[in-house]
Image (cartoon, rainbow over all chains, first blue to last red; front, side):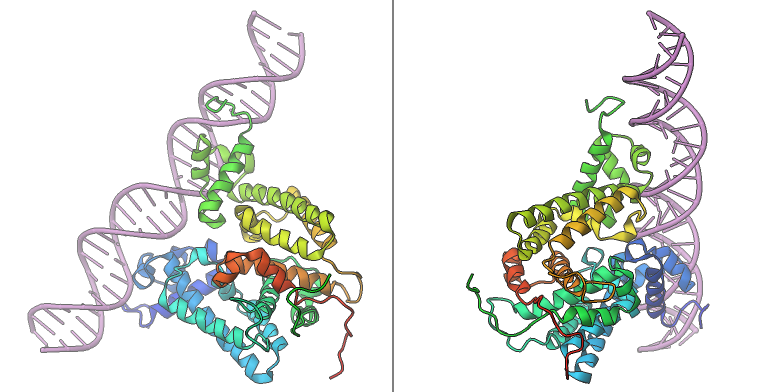
Length: 195
Length: 195
DNA sequence: GCTTCTAACTTGACATTGTCAAGACTGCTG
DNA sequence: CAGCAGTCTTGACAATGTCAAGTTAGAAGC
């Protein structure tokens, strides 16, 4: 099935090969030709399925957002606790590093791709559902509480992946996150606290 | 002074040109030859000063960390309030986007470069000084409070730069951050809260 | 003032890369 | 069985990072 002219599911094979390659050298160092070689096809085969390099990375990112949404939804439905959603967020970054690294690098992607937008919206919805913020309102135009938890968890994941945290954190990142996230509060706060 | 054989301060000119280029297309799309052309020198001139492409980006990142440390220190000494340090953090990401984008992309840099380490350590120290966390201890191996504020502010900046925030946030990011950061608390919390 | 030396920069070359155009193969539809 | 459309290959091109060798300029030594 592999060495026939018609591959069968080359698209799938190319995405898998791309994920492997991203896992080894990061998304910005991805070589289309290397991916093609890994999948056992000619160097121009990827272009037929994905248009260009950004197209391939976009497909990887879209798949990543879908899996990401699944993971967040699962964590939320399991316990209904925000902190477990945050832990799932970080766990996904660690366990599916190539996906995560690709997802949040918009300059490498086709931001207007419909599949990417769909999957990314799905992840955003799952995240918002699990953000643990009681009320939507309170702030004009955005939900400060949801943004706080999202920012904290995302920043934690980014700094962790970039190697900016001390060994004690890297030894058990999930436990560290639970410790760190305890410094979030979601109770109502006055808009302008008296000085 | 520009079209002489010996440029005078080509190193400086190349870094400036690189910052410009990064500002236009991001650090991963940087072309050494384009930078050289921008500075009016031959395509191989950068190699002499920086070794390779990662070397040039490392120099940019090091300079970025230095300016970053300056900005954080200034904000801290001005008011002594953590929230102002956080605001300076985000303001730096916006006002010096090319630097910021380069600084936190370790796979594009020479992580063992001594200048980079020095500047990065300086920024880390400035950040820790301004993290607004009263006590160092409480946690084994790391300071959960400091990590919380760092993660929140860094995640906010990253998500903002990646365009993941609603328009209301992008209209006045600094004000939004102050709103968001209000959900941090630094009072002593029990290690294992009773269930 | 002249040579010499060394750092700064250029020139030329090479392998690798993304992308495009043209062609070849395959399996399905009529 | 003939055509056809989608799938993949082949060949080419310009652009890129990097290296080796050569050239220039300014400082040091006499």
